Length: 298
Image (cartoon, rainbow, N blue to C red; front, side):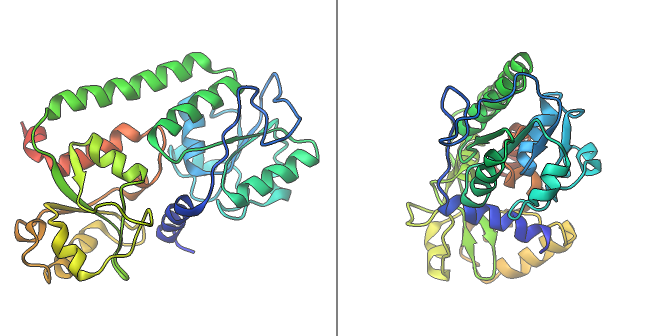
């Protein structure tokens, strides 16, 4: 399975899965095993969790990560324990972890329960929306004794977002169509972290309320939405310039759409905008540069 499909599957998972958040006692869902006092070996079961651990200065403690945990670059060198969707329990155990950090959707929840039953400590966090990210960082920091670094990281992200908000001002919001895939055409709806990032970047989702978080849409809906900017996350297996060129060809059939008429469609870094993690500000800025390029040009 290529990396782009992995990103798409994560999005699909977020649309359907229920996420479990730890209570104040930091115990795994319904489990009775408290977290260890000292954590020296950690296994991360998602790329964005890996990014959080590195951002908190825990790179030496990371003993295992899933495939596609490739940021920061040092994460690539860490032992692999399977994929995001199918972690290898034997590989996790072989890493001799003091703590295994997971997300709350069904597959990872099942892995966490199996590990708990045989005596391993797990921490499950929910990262579905922006506020969830901050809560997850705080829980991971508390579990690993990195409260000071946690406070600094969260404060830094919030401060940068606030400064960007001031820079963008209160001008009219730009209508954005966020494309998850073209064939069949699927976009980001409003009940998503993508929608939150669009709004933080000074935009408005061109798609109204939908039944699904990442709904398929037809040509009529594209025309009616009136998008002024179209954004696509870059696919790793395709050269960005080639994807930009194919976007020009694909969207040319919607000549009356403002974004097409003004050639306002962008291909941006898929890893940054598809992983809700410590690079949140970088993701929002990347979007803002598409919506209000004149501000950054100046």
